Image 1 (cartoon, one colour):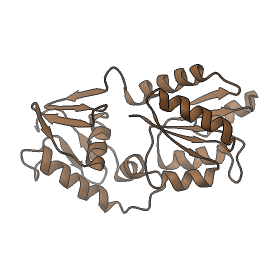
Image 2 (image 1 turned 90 degrees about the vertical axis):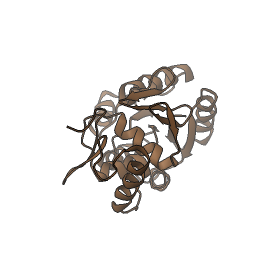
Image 3 (image 1 turned 135 degrees about the vertical axis):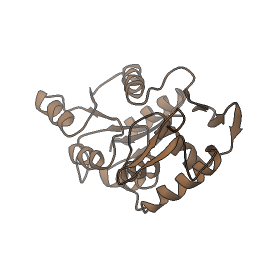
Length: 228
């Protein structure tokens, strides 16, 4: 279930948007300020952030810049500020889309779905097949050679993130931000520990992994094929 964080100090509007997105199959949390959003983002990662500009404390531009330093989560600005300058600043600070208020809920949904498709390759039933693995995002399952493998939620999220970026080297810092939360105080060693657990469940030889590999000094990389 894709997850969305709504950051908006208009409680009535955010409640309406949250209910609509939940009815469309999304898991939604709300924050009324950038500072509240930072606290939420320290505890978990989201698939998309819907961000207003006019917020108490840090405004949406500052929140976007802070989040972008830690994560590449898709960010959609939704604001009544519709000047060309505001749109440019929003995109320049790291926003991926800009939706002017007022907007229809159907229009919002279309923007959200389009951005998720572009950013994560989310399509169809949410199946991700790579090498001997098939990850079913909707069911929360991963199989190897047709056999189900029991994974913890963090192991599943770690496998999903790496498999979706086959061949790309991903740093520990980015994995912490995207799997544990952008403002999490979890130590980088946590990634190494979870990677060891993941390899123990998914690799024939965890000490010499063929798929979930370490790239010394840079991070980790998923390869669908066998080790060369």
